[in-house]
Image 1 (cartoon, rainbow, N blue to C red):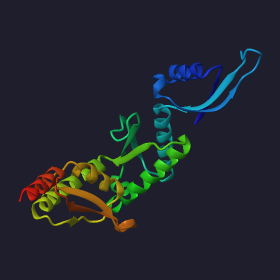
Image 2: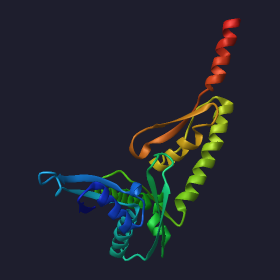
Image 3: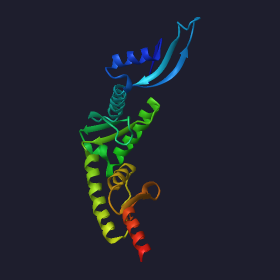
Image 4: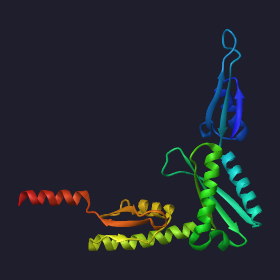
Length: 224
């Protein structure tokens, strides 16, 4: 993370914004040192650590470029920056890879891709000293995978709502469980919970009558 020094925080932030071609509110920073000098504090200065989305993108490009060069793999890298739907004011970095051999980078059941994603996230968070949401995909493999798990979850949720019998899905990684949690959160009469540990952690879709329906039943019982 880069360090910047100026007479005031406002001056430093405006300088960074002009340099990076962004708005001041798009800058993440930590004040490292603030000095005051002279009788009237006229010689004061402030030093900060700061970064923008441009810095994060450049780091990801350089990090993955070096990573795949070491593996002797030719890979095209595209980074799309979106607003994070879950964290207001935060950004989501979608890293799309397209390799000479995508199957090698994806690995069996997406294991290699998950490992790359884990390593990259750790490197980004350590460098910028902040939890930054990064999603790594290979030629939209994850996007297609999410569509499939949503379809499976929808089918099983419908069965659970009709039969009132809970259903346990096969073990899956955290990101896929998260997709299903979000997808089914407004689905009537069902709820989801993660159970199990490690590689065996999976989702259970449970029959959960709607609150309104429960209230109606309770009222009906009182009148009997």
